[in-house]
Image (tube, rainbow, N blue to C red; front, side, top):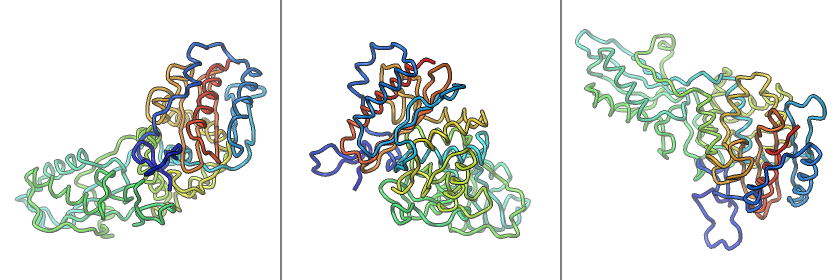
Length: 423
């Protein structure tokens, strides 16, 4: 079984453990390449030819099932700076999140937000009594938590409601009720909290997240001076109320911020929630399978290709090629707003997230951004460097990995050389 980031280590393991960035909502194990550290004093620019020679030398050290593609996005001629086995499909691990967040940014819009709403089923009398029920309606916001609950309860009180005679229902029906991904037979696992259309502080492992959210809402209503006579249950909003106005609503952060909260720490839960939101946004039910199909269609629309099985990369059969990963990274820039949002969503080398302790003090630090990806036998790094007078997109996909530290050292050294490229 794979082990996950800094959270889990294989019991009794003597060999280098398999760190699993895709299977953890936090960063990869902190790591700094010794070779990269040695480069701190060497900032001599690389020409295209010099860069190709250095990358070839480093690629020769990589596992046999590795592929590489490096592309100068601003070059008018000969934009491909290095390629090797660039058309061979590899397991993506958390590089799948690049496809998921790109799709969410495009389909939903970087400035859009996810609304959690409250509606009434009944009549609010003149003395503030609601003769009926309250519905807390989820829309798949992965970040919904205490701040949202507090705002909604305050809005209900401001709407003049002082007592609810009926129940508080949680409506999670924007999603299906499968709690996990194919990797865990659609059940929650140690690597991902239960998925639901209505969650409360989603990193918790409640048996029914919608019940937990509704209970938190009822408790906050009480704190706001709104008495609730009935119990808490899960139920779909009646059809007759579909077009009625809500009495309270809470907006998530922008999708661009949720994408960054997904990619910088490699958050599996956020990735899978966004995948289901994308599926629901296209008029279907919020399912992993439906979201994966939307992701595949979006990839094709920008000239890329991916075999998507989930949103996070937990499932081993998420596959693409280094060339197609780069085509995604370059293709999203057809829309500068989307491209900029994806760029900003990635961790800065040597500064934050899964790259905080990688490439520190090198030419790549703060200049390159990337998405890591690690499951058993896999170590990947894809992203961008500000070099060559523009952006250089790269994808370094290594499968068949036994030495994870060694694989990361090669990746780091490659990115440092890319960072020093000058057209």
